[in-house]
Length: 116
Image 1 (spheres, rainbow, N blue to C red):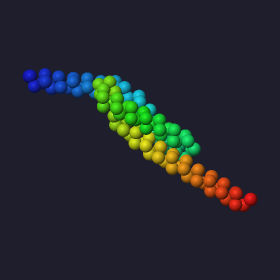
Image 2: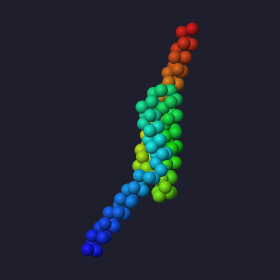
Image 3: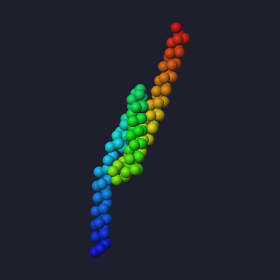
Image 4: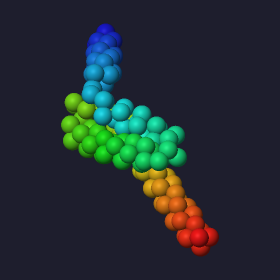
């Protein structure tokens, strides 16, 4: 009989643990992930993807730090890491796209001065 009580106690602890996991604050991590995805999709829009990527990067760093320092309050460490990675990728792509357009405009400008 004592084995059954231990089993029920363990089951109650795991249910309480999973309930407390769902009550953790994951807002920054989720917002970071969403902005990282949006920045990745919109990196080709001048400055929009870059700004979304930077914000996702900052929020991802903050959310990851919060989840590591206070795991009983903040959750979503994996979501924060995903948002952080997507933020880095969209920031790099946005910067490369911006540099590409700057060179295109400089090239067109130099071609216009040669024509006239």
